[in-house]
Length: 366
Ligand code: SF4
Image 1 (cartoon, rainbow, N blue to C red):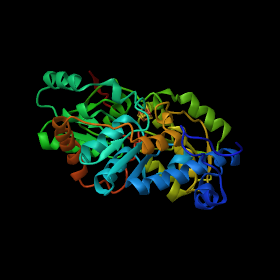
Image 2 (cartoon, protein in one colour):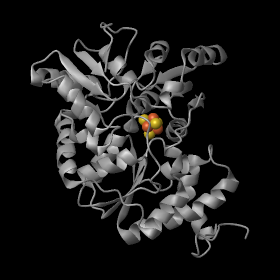
Image 3 (cartoon, rainbow, N blue to C red):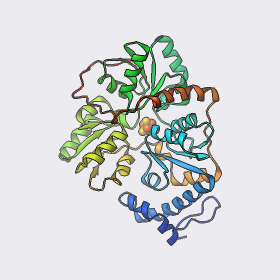
Image 4 (tube, rainbow, N blue to C red):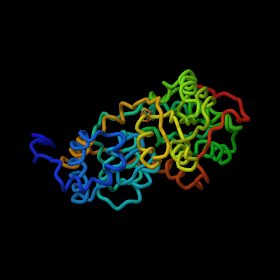
């Protein structure tokens, strides 16, 4: 067969003129990252997935770290994990397919318990989310009574259920300061990302108790990587994610959440840019910023990369794999996420300026 393939006994999916026309606008966005040959395999799946979504009243929530053919081809809502969870709660679809990792699907289920949430591959985990359990949080609370617990959204529903309020990298400083004020204390537990906690501690007078969880993608970047990039590409502006170690943020030109990096590129339109984060993010931002040259380095998240067009297609055809959350856990986890959502959103996503930071107090690591 020249084009397309037989999907588990289903009719062959072929790159017909009709498929080509249906997917032309998407091809235009991804053509710098996908070869014409690859597109002949992707496009029929994209057309079929988009047809199945309409038939099954389903939407696809695609994280910024999805590959471009998923992000631009089938994502109904795209963004960071919190933006996606908010869309999960707002949309009127009966089925949500989470093109992301398991904790994101759980967060969608927590905010939209009446909807059927599917994840295309149950093995799509996260090193940060798996670094801590609900039982760990209960022990931490016993050791630090009266200290509010702020949890990064990259956690399981069990962990969120033990939490006072959630945060993202875009609002972590704001949430930590809010929690300290509300509880009338000078100390906050911020878990589970050690590097995010250390980077937040530099931005606030609130003392931070942290957990030694790490994102396996962002922890791999080193100051030497930045020095090498500066030497090779002296004109390039370097943007880093706050899940990276502080030495990376100190050496970068700008540090902020994926949303903040997106805004930076869209507004400042740098000639050359390096995004110190997951690889696919650069490909997806580039489609909207054709005048900017995106340069490596590039680390892939193996968990995000478990999601493919093929297993999204299978998820819709076979109605698999459903993500459930215990109702008692769902109610308590929702409270923690909702508290964060109810805070006034930051005017702009937080910038982590460690060079100008006034606070040099390190965290207390549990
Ligand atoms: S990039 Fe890091 S935080 Fe995100 S899913 Fe992968 S391991 Fe988890």
